[in-house]
Image 1: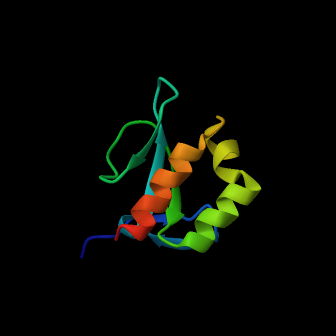
Image 2: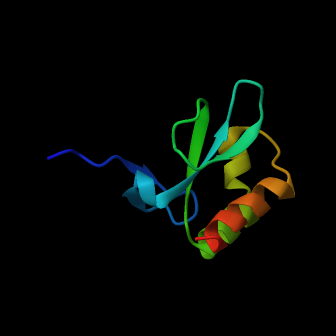
Image 3: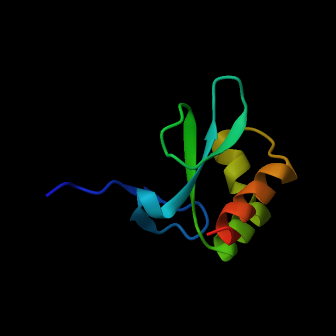
Length: 86
């Protein structure tokens, strides 16, 4: 039986299956992307597919602290689009 990788959500701090989370990636060039495949190179952070977790991350600026970069509203809106686009 294959082990399913677990990651921690930045919003609710719960461990969940990697496939059920949204990955935000900062690459070598300090570009931020929403990684739908989970395979992009770079530093990754994970958020549940829940608007409450996203709101908590935006309010606390936790994602910016973890990735050590200022995030534009466009990044948050693209994550919001992934959540509502399910």
